[in-house]
Length: 250
Image 1: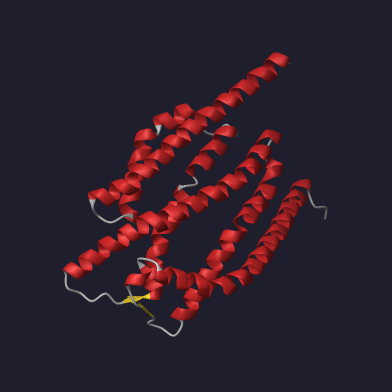
Image 2: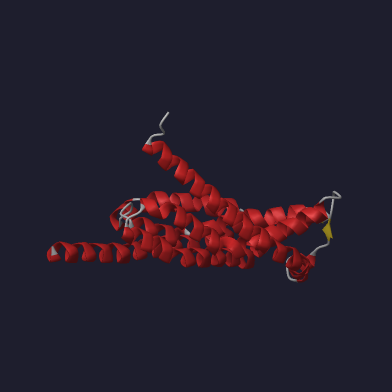
């Protein structure tokens, strides 16, 4: 029985995807070795700076220490591997893109990694201490003893930092979608009221339930959206200019 060309194409894509996944896993595992080395140092550093220095970290299970050790190591490995992971994803999808779209996707890979790191820094240095201070203040006002497990502490931190790091990808995503013609500045302008509503919900979910804290998270998210709109206009203008130049040359 002959195999159709479509089936061969699908099998080829699956084979390529498997190869790229193995490459990503290899790089992550190599980075994990470095993560295992720096994990104790990272934990000691986090424990020496506020708010970690203000509490005693406890473990409520024999596995908590190992779990945190491996979690920090894996987080380090993923951060180090992020540019390579994005490059492999670009390599897999580039065959379905036009030459201009391929160049745009590759160009945005380092910016995507940079925005992710900025989001992590903002979440950890600004929003996380603010959220911890609020919850700690409420706990003390109720005359409760603060006894935190290390797993719960990091779970609380990751639930704040990771969503913000993802949110900081918005400008890069908008630029890329504008570049390939999926988004336009006009569409972003029409979606502004709905986008603001979504940002209000996100800010309320990852910040303490008080007005000042909500504003301290909501305002940067709004700025990210408005920056995305400005970048979209710039990319759209260049895209239209290139299309007009190509049409006039033809």
